[in-house]
Image (cartoon, rainbow, N blue to C red; front, side, top):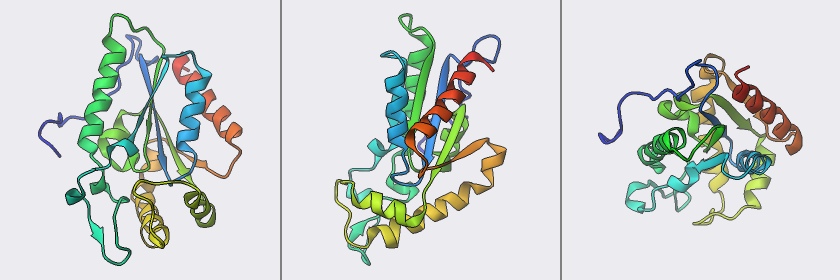
Length: 212
């Protein structure tokens, strides 16, 4: 990791009681097109303006193709491996956002910071900083269908999902499987009705904000 990043893992700041977070950090990770961003936006819309802030890991793909692996078999860059993302930059911005939300004289709780990214929990620093952790899953056919309806820049090439994206998802999912119970990662079935998922997570958020 870059030397500009503090080596220690930051613990989210809490109030003096140690139960109510000044800034509740919600992590949404898992399968592509599983419903992470939809949930993020629903949570943001539920609260008054300024309460919820969202940081998208998708905004931190390297734009310099020299930093990406080019896959000859599909004639496309590999955007589904850890090295395709600027995790140091994302982590730095997460810490800066937490600091701003918890120390600004014009800022008052509650604050909710949502971290949205398909490889979020595969990066230990990001896993550690979250209070609530949700990992989205989908069956192959549903994930493939949703992927085909979404625009990417650069666009997917034929066969990319089957040869790269899906196998990478399975690998990254296996990599965090042992952590799920240990770290309190809740699995979300992305085929469930969006409102049901929203209500479940909203209840968890409200409980966490109240210190329950």
